[in-house]
Image (tube, rainbow, N blue to C red; front, top):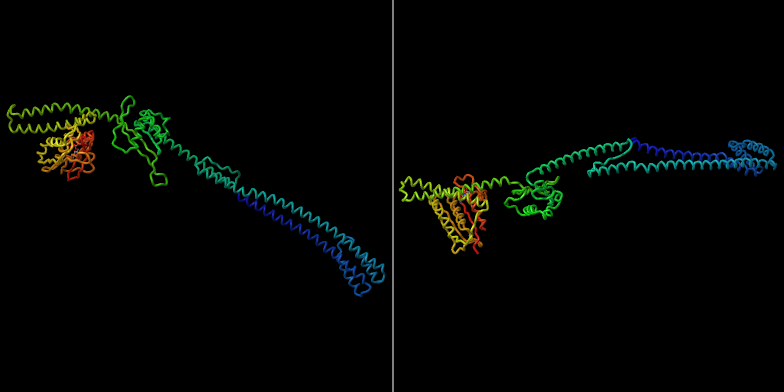
Length: 573
Ligand code: ADP
């Protein structure tokens, strides 16, 4: 049954009960009124007439009008006969009164009339008593019926009061709670309303919705789990070690490669703060140290794993997301990826040793060729014509360049293999600069470039490997000449600055774009468009040597205005 029908039935029933109660009350009151009316009209008036006749009887012989009045009351009594025997008694009274009228002094007749009146009065009095009893019974009946009906109404009304609000409110309360559960993602929540009313239809719709939500959530979860497993498998199968950290630097995952090289166990690592795990693991400690410090150009990590030395380049990838409804990115963790560069490193080592071998093997024959040329130039080995002299001079230039190149290649291989031997000793800056400039005399002359030397007086000596320091300054002066226009000037200066000695080589040549000023110190890097001969190694070697001698090297340059290369060296103490 529908709620609407149920409510209509309940309210109609209540209404019907009220009407029934009212009708019963009216009926019972009517019955009582009827009984009272009966007594009043039927008996009370007869008593009233009798009482009048009684009074008139005493004066019947004394006042002439009295018989007439007596007859009037008697006539009224005749017309108000209601009780059994009352008619006979009234007829007797009329007969006795008629007799009295004929003999008004007859006291026996007076007594007789009086008795007749008394009889009528007694009859009516008895009737009143009887009818009062009947009215009393009617009243009792009324009370009984009204009580029964009221109790019945009360029970029905009470039942409705108790049940009706709950009947409507309880399902609404259950529904509210269920909606709250669904909002809290408890999709297993169901409603169980019995019957066939609107609430059970509502429960059916709600349950269908909850089931669909559950199915959706299950498929969504299954999809997310599949994706998670896919990503985990992918990370596990990577040949590079990967460690995932959350925003509080707890270890979220660590792949097989990372476990292999670190010697860690998955079960004692996952979910633990990385700092705690690092207390007992050197590799993780090293990685965390590098994370917390500012990123610098690092040497590859050398790790002994799988019975061989492996080289790894560390990359820290911070992960941030923009949470739903927000606009700012929030850091949620980071990845440490160790890229296995062992194959490249091995190739690099092979390349370096090849270059070292080749340049070493070249050095001796080139030197002997230079010696032979010097002998050829000597008059004692024969006289040369001008053309032959020119040819020999050009071969000598080429040999000098070859020697310079093989020298640079040898130097860089020594730097790369860590075999560069430095012999630092207190050296005079003056000597270093003059030797370096002298070594570049020929190329300066060829371009008609004047090399000016400006050295501050009384400079303290610096602690350097003299040969290497001279080579570095000579390389800077030679670069300044090579990248300058003809007939320009190169200034080599030395001065004291904040406890160090600065040697600066200034030219007014082509200059270097700002974007390349750091990269020119990288191995094999040459500014694009540079058509001069060269290896791109001179500055890289210089930087390595200067750093090993506790100094620094840098450049100030602007396109078209020229460059100033400076080195700073600590003074000897
Ligand atoms: P390279 O043998 O090519 O000269 P370097 O390492 O000495 O190798 O120099 C690297 C690059 O820096 C050069 O190729 C050149 O492009 C640039 N460079 C070096 N010195 C100067 C300079 N004084 N003026 C302009 N460019 C220079």
